[in-house]
Length: 172
Image 1 (cartoon, helix red, strand yellow):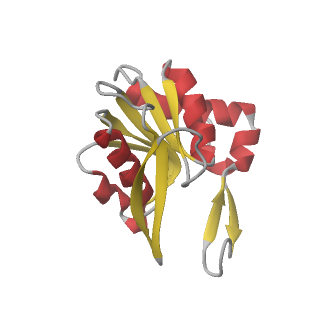
Image 2 (cartoon, helix red, strand yellow):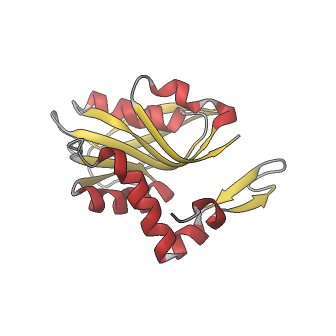
Image 3 (cartoon, helix red, strand yellow):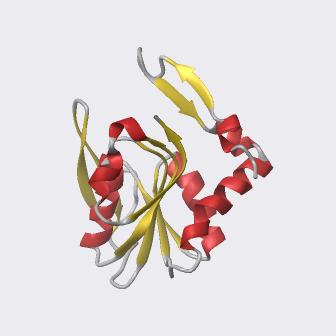
């Protein structure tokens, strides 16, 4: 099994002083590492009847699109307000200083859809919870969550209810 952590580059003080950014671009650039990550993200969900994978820009698009292809499902993009060209629904979530929003097309998730929510990092859980809100308000069912890495010290998993949370790497 490939050591995925060896493909993650730490960038200190980005985007601001005191933050260590976890750069996944070396993983994405490695055919073997990227394929292994997608296979391992998909593993718990291959028999879950996932009909859609929802990912937010930008790294969630990369992982989500590949994961949707691997699971044989559709992909739903969630974006910042004003970026999608059709009728949208939005969900607001808390940031350290203020709030932000995500939008998706109103017809992207329909009643009966079984949706897997994916992203590169689970931090505080606010973005993932907002995605789940979009899914449930559209009549879909959240099957679970898949993350490349989880920042355990932020306890984001606690905001995601009883759904299965699958993270490949954990940062203490």
